[in-house]
Amino acid sequence: MRGSSGSPLHWQSATELARAVAGRDVSPVEVVTAHLERIHTLDGRLRAFLAVFADEALAEAKRAEAAVMAGRPLGLLHGVPVAVKDLFAVKGTPTTGGSRFLTTPAPADSRVVARLRAAGAILLGKLNLHEFAFGPEGINAHHGTSWNPWDGGTHRMPGGSSSGSGVAVAAGLAPVGMGSDTGGSIRIPAACCGTVGLKPTYGRVSRVGVLPLSWSLDHVGPLTRTAADAARVLAATAGHDPRDPSSSPAAVADYVATVGRPVRGLRVGLLREYVDLADPVVQGPVVAAARELERLGSVVREVTLPLARFAGPVSLAILGPEAFAYHEPLLRRHAADYQPDVRQRLAVGRFVGATEYVQGQRARSRLCDEVNAALRAVDCLLTPTLPIVAPPLRVTEVRIGERQDTPRSALTLFTRLFNVTGHPVVAVPCGFAAEGLPVSIQLVGRPFDEATILQLAQAYQDATDWHTRRPPAAP
Image 1 (cartoon, rainbow, N blue to C red):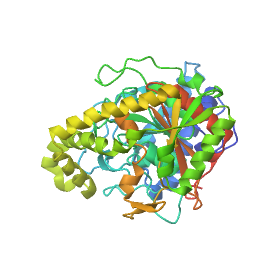
Image 2: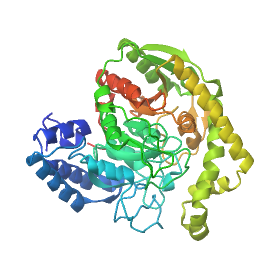
Image 3: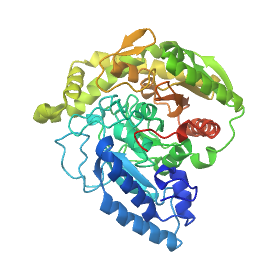
Image 4: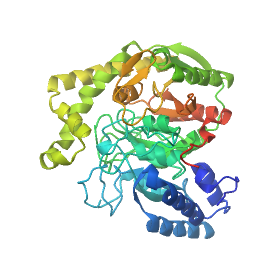
């Protein structure tokens, strides 16, 4: 089945699908059917989904079609299929967190799912993840690890923890995958799988009904194929929620209108420390992306963040005890049911004392001040999303230039700073390494200025074709 643009429906963006449905060029039933067929064909190997709501999705699609034919007002995502990481509560289904022991059906939708439905989105199912969102590799020992579609022969890390979200969007199983991000868990799979990943400002999107990992570091956002799609999803899900104590009352911008504006005169700060720390196969595409933004009229200058090297220890001092505090009662009953790496990481949090936690929060304020100071001189920061491309699943060490590191440390090297500071970040594909694996940049904005980074990201995508490439394991 093909849409009005001529491409198969499963490769059309959320924006294209919403417009085609509103223009009566395609039926929501056709759109959902195309994606369900795609899931049936490919997901046996890709393992992006933990649950597929086929009957419910088709029933919703028929109701969406009736609304179009009746001329009713349509939401931003009317008729668009969406899938959510299995941290998001969906009424009547378990929120497993990728575990094997959380089996109680949720009594209500999470706030994000409710807002997606209100915007007309159609829920396809629940997506795979690193168990309890506690790992950047995307490994799930209980349900099987999602297969990164950019390598058909080697099982490479899909990135985590929102592994199923990255794979589903990259492989054409869903145009939108909702994820969560505590140390990079939206942006890492976006980079590994060649998609767009948006981590909004802390407090911009409600986390009510989302299983927590770390209350003061968790963010919720979408993985999509284009920045325009991310803007559309953010517009549908952002806004104050009085049930979420961290939710901000700040006004929500018109992201959809802003995303198409020119970027001439916008100031971009290239973060030199992070570029120099990346592997050479990553450095080249990142610098080329900066040059492309210059060609589009932006002003690129180098910036430095001397304290950025402390982001890792600060993140761990906060994340460890917060994660353990949530999981302690579950560990008392189900310790043997956790996958080993997650159980080990939670155990470390038990031994982070109050002094270390408080010092971590104090250092956090210093990091926030430094990033805010840099963003007074420029409109956004540009860095590599990852220092490497997606490594094979079972490796224990990766090479970054002339040095060795663990995959876990490497994958979070450039992402966790901006969870500590809470700034909005969008990851965008910017090229490919020699082995055909995606490379990604991240654009970091001022608090609650998602509009500017999405504007830059879409301008870059309009000028390049990296996001239009299709992975070989998802023909």
